[in-house]
Length: 253
Image (tube, rainbow, N blue to C red):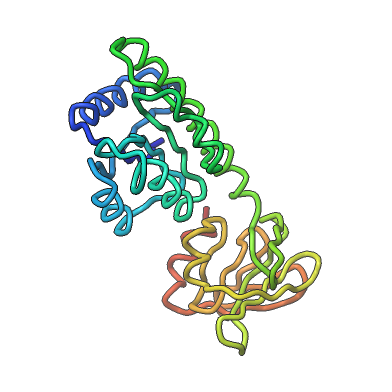
């Protein structure tokens, strides 16, 4: 598995050291499955970090953040950067790496929820082991989170956030109203505001058969001659001809 990592530290030597420790950790954590840490960005200041993260930020990234960016524990420090990251990557795994152990209480006061607060040490072997153990915890969380999100579809109906088991979904289609989608499932029909294209990106267990419809292939019966798909409740959705080859290939498996 490949995990996306971001490093922000005002000391370039520390960045180089952390990247080396990531290689060691990847080797230690690779068992039956190979583990790779891809450093998608690195920065030495709050501003440069924000510039990078505004352009690209993953879902479920791992972030090594120095607290005292430019020796500044006031404005635009590692805590501020962590808040920005949490707002844009809810599954972010924050790891603070700092010289001051007494600052750890601030992470709890600001509800930043880091998975670890590592104090820089001259003992490289000890630091490497600590980082490897912390990365293992991050990986466990991300794997469990990915598994959970894959089994459930989450959507917002008004002010209420709802979850439905992925296996209970028949299909999701557009309606006559702008941006309103219809979710047809084993227990009936639900409507919510959303985008077919965005759901297609975040719900790989659903198959897009047209610009207006996503289906659960586990609940679909396909008729290639009439280009239609029938569901257990009797509903029918038609797929576009340009998707014929893709659907034949998918269902032939």
